[in-house]
Length: 233
Image (tube, rainbow, N blue to C red; front, side, top):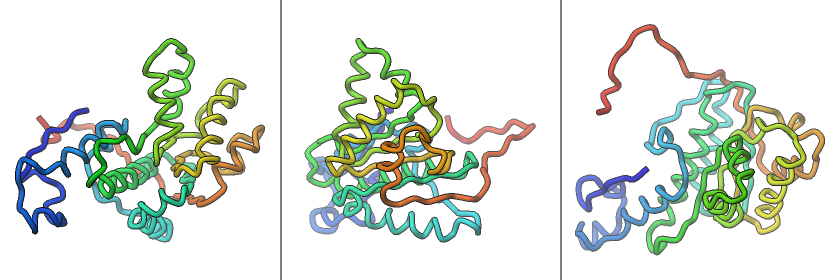
């Protein structure tokens, strides 16, 4: 997905930009282009691109405070190669949304002077496992390279795949490489750490080696029996 930007009114950094205070906005500024480059090369799904406020159920307030701490300290979180396993037995309660929020916050924090280097990546694991089996697909190599080397990676829905030997081998290579090289990783899942890859403790040990958080609030996606425009053209 490509984003258009202008160097004045549409800049998301205009309220906190030191360059604007010092020099004003002009067409030579690279801050916004660098951020959107990082965003467009991160593979974040379209529905998670836009910033939205996330409100916890009362039962999840403490967890949201921990996630907020990570969000505000995201550069150090990445520099220290931290790992977050965010799980819930319920779907639709903002696991992926908050993971993407952390990734976007990181991209925004390091975009100044980044010089258009690729830094973060989002991967939906069920789709990736299918892609990984297409050995002559160039996209496969691009995804694997990103998962092995980028500073911060989200492995979304990690617990949903079948425990086949091939699937385990592919994931173990990626997870072990990131773990060994001190690269920060966020995992989301609908299964508890105890249920995660029961037959392969090496994967579970690395995935759940640091911060493990459970969201207990139920999903918030609701259906309707009427049609109204969303206001998006």
